[in-house]
Length: 283
Length: 284
Ligand SMILES: Nc1ncnc2c1ncn2[C@@H]1O[C@H](COP(=O)(O)OP(=O)(O)OP(=O)(O)O)[C@@H](O)[C@H]1O
Ligand SMILES: [Mg+2]
Image (cartoon, rainbow over all chains, first blue to last red):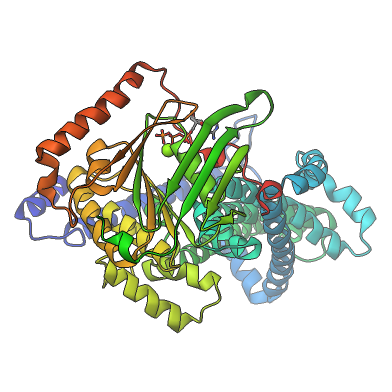
């Protein structure tokens, strides 16, 4: 059905790409995706309500979708949601913003200067393989407030993806492009702002999107250990007080927040880089 | 007599006993050997030579991006000191700023000089009209065809009123028809702006059609093995390339270049990447 429809409209030759074909195909794809989600939900509902026990893994204590929905509604009404969300968002924004500034600045420097590379790269190479989560104990000891230590963990988590992608982006700039710019009169600073930065921008934004993901990941872990508010704390606290539906509410919130902040970064990238066709195609 | 020579007063290139080595340490090799060449103001010179003979190296050095090992280069009596907008550089493709609209690409040189926005955009519009691209100001480079992109490149260099224009196979990536159109356009433009042009090409027809003089180089390390002066009348028409004299010269060039066909093929690299372009080396 779908096939015959699209082929006739192609042969008719009057329908441009935005005509009959595209909306129908898009609609079919949206339908497929929605169906996939629905199947997952139904499976979850069955496993939870039937209390399936497979030995290795048991669903006896797993709340059902309906229970989770109720718990989410109660959280929304209690007004606590806002304070948890605000706490997490502030920490993520703080850590991520700091990582973005430091990562991009350092990356530009390391990508262009031999000297900076020799001075800064060795310690960074040692620190890089240490997962941000492993910083938690030391961070708690180092920083006076647990608030700052959590922001620091987030920062550490986001820093390296941003830094490495920036370095990579800068080093990949075509030397002929740099030569052209210098032959047109670019000096040090203008070369950075007019050429290196925009040329590396797609790679930088990839780093920012990945960094945003790791920032959430690290924050949630840090909150479980050191927090008093925040989504991660809420999730862990729900477990300790045996409020099982709330655990899933927390998990879903984390997923939702991580996803929407990554989408936001990608949108921002597209808006700032209208020339970047590869970005446009891949989405 | 080439008429451009009549009014050009600057753009005299003087190269003496120039040798250039690329890479460092054990990998160092001689790319150019003892090149001496003098180009008059307003002259159109084509460099012809087998792949890897050091043409791009010579151009990159003239542009100020590479250092000579021996010998000297002066432009209008002045020793080179790094790149300068008066020595404009045009590459084969993909060296427009993809993030800038066409008009801002062309206006870039004036922006670097601190010219106010309105003024530089007016000038850029003028130059775009000169290369036949009026109306494409707001496009991004990726939205233009290869030939149009090369026109933007030319306009972007011309906005700086260069003494010399250094062109490294600027039409090498274009199809035959577009290439011929661009050659005509370049001659028209050159006629109006009176800049010296040093033009690298692999295409013997192209060199014969464009140049006042062709310099033929040997395989690496590049040396000048022959100079051919061309006195075809200007303005030149497309039918020139089928004339007898043209054919004779073409055969001669083929003979000069032919023996190298059997030579070991070298990787095509940009000498600008021969040393990692990091800031420590770049400061001029
Ligand atoms: N980045 C690089 N690293 C190592 N060797 C290089 C590099 N760039 C160029 N070379 C070598 O230097 C020599 C001169 O190169 P150059 O690019 O000047 O030659 P060319 O005459 O322009 O060649 P083509 O006609 O292929 O453009 C060549 O033999 C080339 O292999
Ligand atoms: Mg070359």
